[in-house]
Image (cartoon, rainbow, N blue to C red; front, side):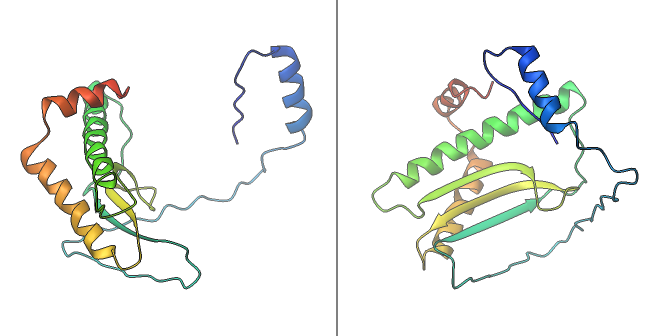
Length: 169
């Protein structure tokens, strides 16, 4: 559990409130083991189609899992790589936002990022889009095409400058 206090505060008063509200909670003597489940690598493309009659919207998602298990950044080189990944995601997301604002958008919202998956031990490059019913295949196609276009041809200097201004670095 974590508590974050933000603002112009009286430290003594807030510390007392926190102690009054949370001192009754104690960590268990024998905490439950937190299991970690491995997400194995595979060569083939796996596809799942799920439906929910109560859903009010549709979405598509892809995950390109990293081949190695997740390791936190501990070196300057790793940190620099994460900055590059953030810049790349920002530039690609700017392109996706332009598509959303086009005359005939392939989706109502789209985004990509590199980060944690549903398995704690694995990260990956991921994308998703919110779509109108029936537009799932086209939305997935556009997401993957834009990702591949960025991979093959990169970004313009203008796109990089715009991403830098957004506060990534």
